[in-house]
Image (cartoon, rainbow, N blue to C red; front, side):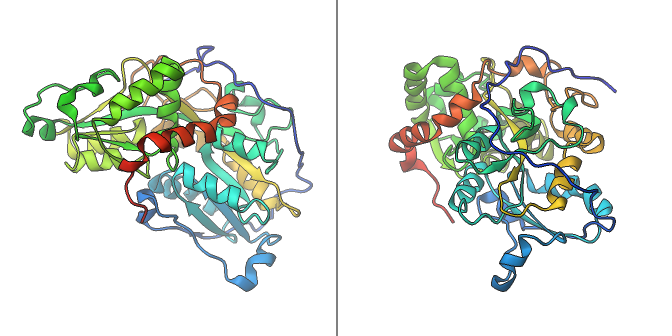
Length: 385
């Protein structure tokens, strides 16, 4: 087993002060919770995967320890895999999962601000959670074991509003067969390479308004190049983009299937999709200039009546066993220790990240960035289903 120590290369995020505090007042229920109600595969395509509560049960669910409403942007297969242990430990609680792309989950949470349905958020971008924090929607909670979480992966307050689990970053999947059919025998290795006119109409990229991967990619480019040159770059890239999808996974999946030659996505999905079709067909690429990135994180939604099972879940969500599960998919986890760098990633994955990324400032400027992006490029966005 190798240990990956996330070093000072990643600048600590500057966080604002505590807005709320919750402490567990008792142990988690002795007969915890049961089966998970899962969404279908359409969630990964940009449709919300959610289980709706009957209208007459909505109010009672708010204080019902046998019901847990989780909003997440984790991949469908990750949710299924990760939750196995929690369900075994809590066999009497019904878990309602609402899963969708980061931007869609963020918008849904903001729309429900005055009547929240979610109890906890699991694996949503830190940038989005900072937007929720700025809207006074999070309740501070220090889960068991939070002291071992690296400072870069949690809110700076003594009782943090959010706690991270891993980091994810920009990558793209190249379908070499598609490129070869267009007379192209090179694999783009840098952002600059993607501007070559020979890739016109061959690139799929996530829409940052609905996809956290799209947003971290745009933020990374603006951070790397500066605002003026960054938007100039995105203008040039737009000439080669065929479509902006509403899911961060979709471009990699569609490139793997041969629909596009290049799918801008994120490391985990690109590596998995390349593995599914084989290295002779597809290759995962991390840009040589560095990757935009964000932290997947958890939080307790502010409600009049908090559930013990919500806090039990947040304790579990950073426990040692689940951290090892996260480390099977991502090389950089919140405790800085993985069970070896997963295949397909560089052995020095921290060096791949664009630094610094000021997540609090990015959260404050989120709407401005999205408005500008939409004005310039939304005409190529895929239709929402």
